[in-house]
Image (cartoon, rainbow, N blue to C red; front, side, top):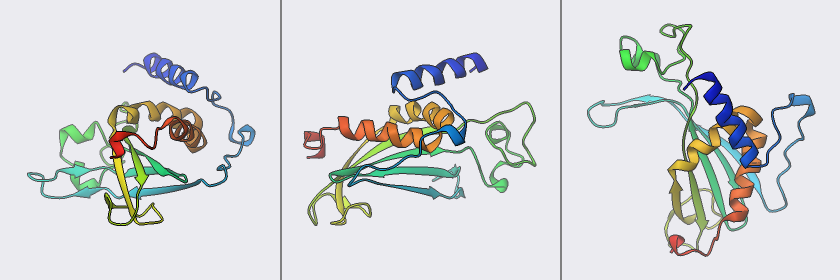
Length: 180
């Protein structure tokens, strides 16, 4: 993607979600979760396992909005890999920020993996879920929404992601059949 295309995508995505364009941090409104909501930020560390079975992974950030009926988790890959997984590996050289193999003309961008819905359920219904007060939930995953969240994160930071997830949360039919 060319720089102009990336900027156009960011502006288009920002306008679509009615989020403010990038402003300096000291001018941005502070995110305050509405009553009954909370946010969490977690990460999954990069790993190198048996490449024939599991492959390798970069550090993944999990930006989570928890509300009264469920939670939404936006997962984004950072492009940060363990050095031993990329040194001497030509495909990974183009995808890493590790300074020993990073080339000045190469830029990595985050990769939006998905948005995951967690519908809280009674005990022993669905799957175990640490976000739920009962410890259980049913879920669904939107892989294409992961791409939509990246420009919002890049332009507006986590405050923009929280606003975006709150919009998604409010648009979700938590009684839908997909949560069975």
